[in-house]
Image 1 (tube, rainbow over the protein chains, first blue to last red):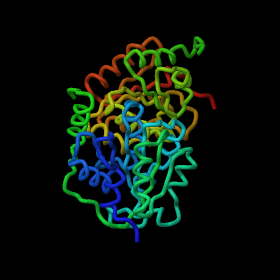
Image 2 (image 1 turned 90 degrees about the horizontal axis):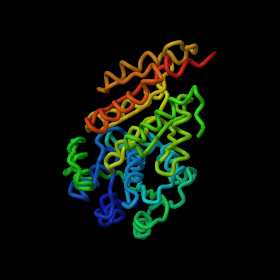
Image 3 (image 1 turned 30 degrees about the vertical axis):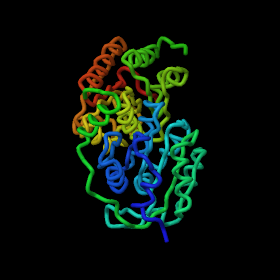
Image 4 (image 1 turned 90 degrees about the vertical axis):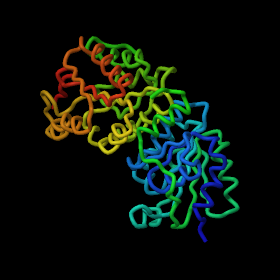
Length: 192
Length: 173
């Protein structure tokens, strides 16, 4: 019985105030907006599929004293899976990656993704040189995954296998400009 | 990093970006950016990020801006085509953005494979709402990069600087 993302992802994120967060489009964007009540420490993408991890890398380099969490789906990560190599070459210690893998493109009607067809994203992360990785398939692994995301000394990659259940869609703001200003005001007290 | 007379302008590109507060340099390598890439790798005060594809540098710049840092994406003009969808994040979210393109498929190009993207560079930049700054002379480099940084980081525009083949010379085939 695969995990339900609506239980597993909040358990892995824990207190969302501990992170600066980037969410990939669709499932994880809705999910983190729900967990944070569309909080000002979250920048959730509504498009630009494949951008979440490199955006999180830029944020992690700019904010070395804060822990950055990139949460994204298997389809979003697959679109620019080579960004794992870009991250692996730099290994920023404050970057944590949570890949919510339901094996499908949920937003477009649950067509199978490559992870349903034999592709293992954790092994691709290992191959990219990311030292702290794990795959979570059971309830009793969630606590260890949560610890890895917030305590790892190097870049961490946690893959959580979940069922094809939708994330809640009630909270997400899709105004990329307003969200940019909101994020920077909260983090930097920047005017724009 | 020793600059020869021919590529001293390349050092000016790097020094001017740094003077304007750029601390994150991302790139897919190209000969026209050789000096800036080497200088960023040797500079302990900046991040030097080797990309696998140019579009990563677009998202990286947006993330850096969220964290209060200035970034520049260095690429060959052929890489512009890889970035187009991610530019929608830049213009839609009004992120300041600066890229420096070393042109191929431009003045004097001898490789027909380069011409298709070379001719498409300006229409693509126009379509995506960029301000474009062209450099054709070595003595324009500092002023043009200064102007581009001001438009990007103060006015919040998406800005592309074209290092044209009049400046860098066409590769011989």
